[in-house]
Structure formats: structure tokens, C-alpha cells
Image (cartoon, rainbow, N blue to C red; front, side, top):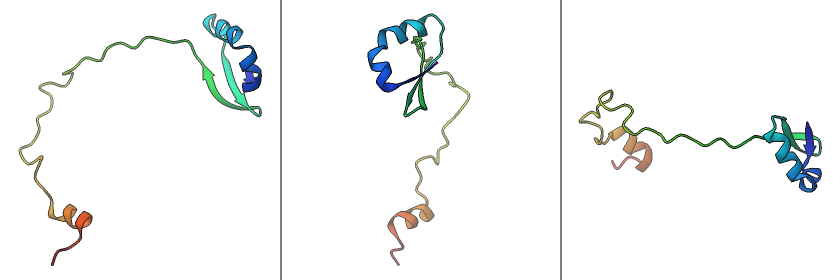
Length: 77
């Protein structure tokens, strides 16, 4: 079901109820579909340390590159 924003303002409660019961509702502006109304799903907490032991930071990680410095700051010579 595609509903223009102006109509959705007047029927928001009804549209929310329709979405909660499985209906697909798309909000449109000037009959151009913009956004879908979807039911809220709680997000699971992210597990920290998921890649622990899979990646090591190289010792040269913080070393500066003269080429990159020249691109940002110009050539001092």
C-alpha cells in the first residue's frame, strides 16, 4: 500500500497497526515512494573482540609516509 505523507499524517495510528499485522506500507511524496514503514526489531548487542587473535597491528602502523605528507602539506624543498 502506498500512502502520501499528507494522508499518512491523518491515518498514522491505522498505518502503524497495519504494519504490525504484516501489511507493507510505503510513504510517498507527490506519489513518489520515499520510505517503507517497518516494524521495530530490537538489535542484538554486538560482541566485542570478535576478531581477537585474527589480526595484529603491524609495528609500522603509526609511521609517517613522506609521500602522503607531501600530498597534504606540500614539498618543503
